[in-house]
Length: 113
Length: 117
Image 1 (cartoon, chains in turn cyan, purple):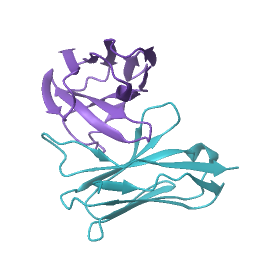
Image 2: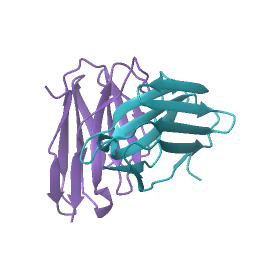
Image 3: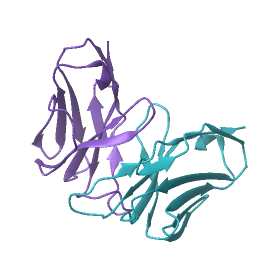
Image 4: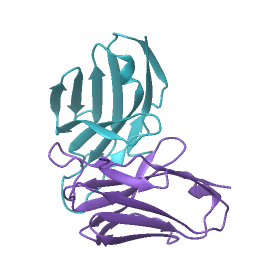
């Protein structure tokens, strides 16, 4: 079993819809959770960052972490064609020292105009 | 200005060859990384350097040798290339060893597409 599981999709939704992207994980030591967006032929860019359980909102994006269920989500409201990309969840146990990010495999999202 | 730049962007080479990918960051960051992304988009760290010192060395074949001449550069040299080395290699940097907090974001380059034939 992989440490981080993510449905690869592809996921296609009409413009304006609410998108829900999810990851599950097995390592209970993970405390830092991130979502990266990767456009085609580009490098990943950090979209959202959360520490421990709870919600964080930034514009049309909301990140949720449920550590008891080992489940994280990214919601995109009023989705736009420019949101079409691959979304990767990432997580780690600490934010310093000899730590590394563990990524999910990414979900490819297409917003249909 | 590109924050993290890597060259070449595309590289096609034959099995058995030796090749290098170069990376430079102009963000003044202390830490640089090499990640590998396979055909299924799985992104996995290979190495990280902090101020030219090797910090993370995941179980990568010793055909892969990173070199950091200074903290703004981290090059990746690959000997005796194999078909399975075909992937996208991303260079990245961050202010300090960390995992991308809002104050410690990891910035990725645009990737180097390596195809071994």
